[in-house]
Length: 401
Image (spheres, rainbow, N blue to C red):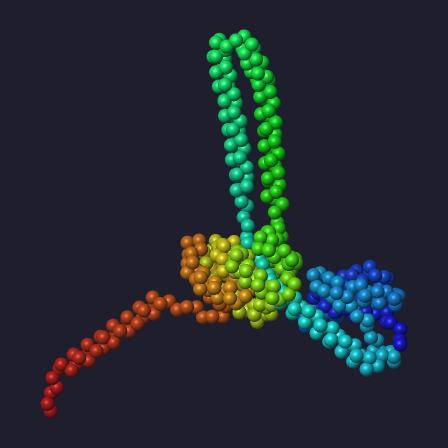
């Protein structure tokens, strides 16, 4: 058997990869002589890469360690390169390498499909800065202060009552009342300060707890509440947006049951099965909406407020001319079903005191029914006038020759 090549073939690299970035990725394995990317002639995007090591053994180490590793968010595949110029590399060997590559790609595709069947995608709802926690904390402090004051007032009332009744009591009782009163007067200010310090510490702890809550914590809380403790949760910001999470279950049946359950009890998270989401260009175009009749001051936040109620929004784009809005925008959804619901539900909604018109991109704008009705009425009036003129001519007696 021939010795292992000192060059590796790299597939699946990001399109913006440079030769220097490819060299830096493999330099940790061992000394690299050179690395270069093969680019498409028209788009100049990187498609494949070759890395030549100074030591042959380092090439095999790179195949074993870096195959399947992440590079700028994409998983790369590293294989031993076949030298076509050498006489040892026959056509049968090249064909066998291609067949092995196809088999490996088929296995990866099947495993990816199975994983997508076992995965549910959820989007954490948009959260605004809620002053509720701070408000409750302040009300609690106010209530505790009032309790302390009422307790102090009650102590004073008891002391005054004791002083009023001290004339009728024995000398021993009056001395005891004086001792307890002096002790309470000496300890009361310190107790109030300690309580205020404890209240301030509790307020700080509550504020810290509010700041610590993350989107990941919310997703785990929802899953634990509905007994989905065995699911694996990971972020999916690169594929489905910043607020997206992948929830992977043990098998497809559990994923289907969880999806049906979450669809009922966690509608705000917009759960969807991953295999129902297509990232292809044709599917993306079918989920793209155009929103017309917008106010000049309409913003992306206004659009999200309206359209997030029908499903997770993939993107919002405002075409501008000289940094000014052109009165319309594009809203992109992840699935066709959400887009259909948005067209039916968001049409004629008011955004900044203007009714918006929502439709799919490429669809002809709806005709103005009022204009059509007016044209029909005018046509009917003209037809009536023509009929009257004809009737008038019929009434004129014809002269006999």
